Image 1 (cartoon, rainbow over the protein chains, first blue to last red):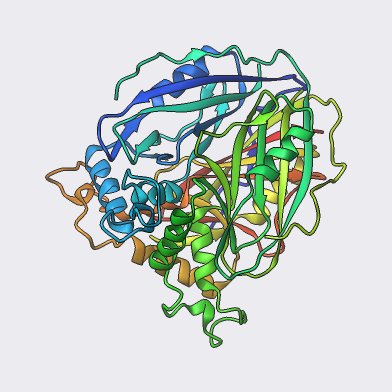
Image 2: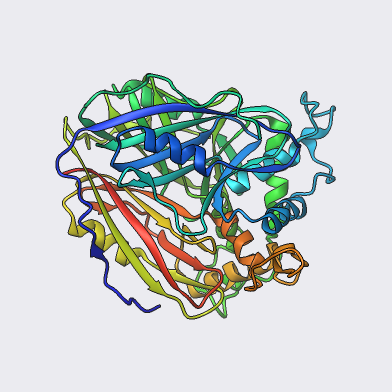
Length: 161
Length: 161
Length: 161
């Protein structure tokens, strides 16, 4: 590891401001059992609509079989993400959550729950200059792991104007 | 993906308030090597006890073999989560961390560390109306990955009254 | 689960303070395709340099093949983390992202993307008494998953003085 630049303050320092907290709900109707959705623009639009200059946006799934993560939005890669999820947690293994002798859930979705906890249910992203901070290839992705369903995400913006 | 509703502001907008930061420590004595614990009520109680109306709660493990995540609390599923962890990271593989020739750690807990970093060591949850925001089936779970031990979690509440 | 202590407020309660948001960029030049870096001191130094007493630090990768997580910094364990990543997501599988018929990316880095989303692209850590809160063995680790490259992380400090 070589530190090319010692970390240089970027003078994006908010003075002594008062904080604001803003909440919205994002609704997504999914159309497959396992599918990925690009929420980048919708989250960016919500942030731009409010006058929060510096702060963070917390995006939270309200479901146990929906996950959120940041990565590239490229169709070949989306195919691989689904392939990886199918491989790391097979839907065909004998999960107890799918067994009527042990579980009152009849959705046969053990794999959906298990994949969700490997990916994570929420994302915290920085806001700077009134916009969500993302690298060149970074996009906000939602994984539907047990669709099709109507899903809700809660978006909380937290920062100073 | 169909957007049923464009994101509608929910008018949960805090005005120009001053922020408060409150910290507590949650102590859990675990009783197995690999076990899951439901911390939902304890975290919810801490949040309710303080007068933070809108904001977030950051729950952080202070250990390298304890993880936190959100999912459903159902006994069949808990069995499957442990099964999945055992399968994705086998305790029986020849890990160098367990080899006295390479490691001064004699706990034989390489699998515990590796499972911890797949699940994550912290959770950030939204607070709204003075309560932790969780979906209908969402619960706050702690994974003990190398117990039994006495464990500490740090709970930070951050928001406006 | 036994609660030894009911959660006792630690009196680390900031009064009604105004919040400050500070941002820096951390630059790291990596030297291998798959390698782990210990960023603990650099992040701790940034936090100490600013007068934020209570709050949080949000560390965000700006890349789709760099991940961040918290675990122990021990050379045998670092070897095992890389071994685990190689095993859970094999570079040799036939990923579509690596196939010129389906992808315009010629880096052959499908495995890098897939490993990144299992580990996560950001970390939120607590600040208390002006310092990053970490347990005895916890360190802040960055995983380079497709190096060597010049990488940027954005550090946002959010809190009260």
